[in-house]
Amino acid sequence: MKTLVVPYLVWYTISASYEFVYQVYQWHANSYPIRFNLLGQLWCCYQWGEKSLNIFGQSMPMYGPADLPLWFLRDLIVVSFCTPIIYLLLRHLKGLLPIGMMLLYVTQLWTSVPGFSIHAFLFFTLGLYGC
Image 1 (spheres, rainbow, N blue to C red):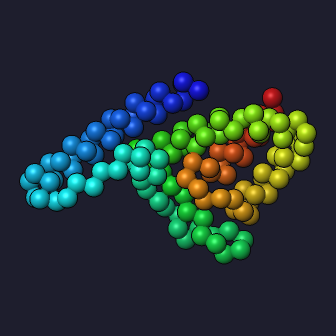
Image 2 (cartoon, rainbow, N blue to C red; image 1 turned 90 degrees about the vertical axis):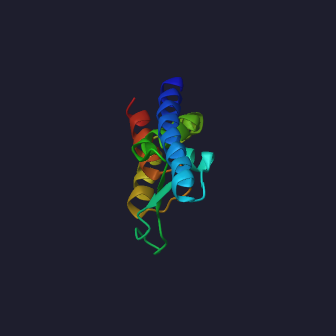
């Protein structure tokens, strides 16, 4: 877990520091207000794919942190916390869990809560099933 969280926090700190310094500069130079949300920068700063729809026509946007390339690392950290539950479900459901996850992936019947992407859960489950 440390190998995921430490790099994420280091890169996040670099990105957030740059954003904060930039906003302070804009405030000082142009009197723009400072709008810096520390948790928003860490967890959910950007949104994209608002027009992506599931089979029921509901919007399924994706969310990312301030350092956007780290969105998958953030989701992998969440999946790592859920590993005992996934492992327990795999032990009892065997091959049905990966099939069910693939159906959820294809139909996009999944939550759009930041950090809980179907991409991370599906491929983590497939990897765990292959072991």
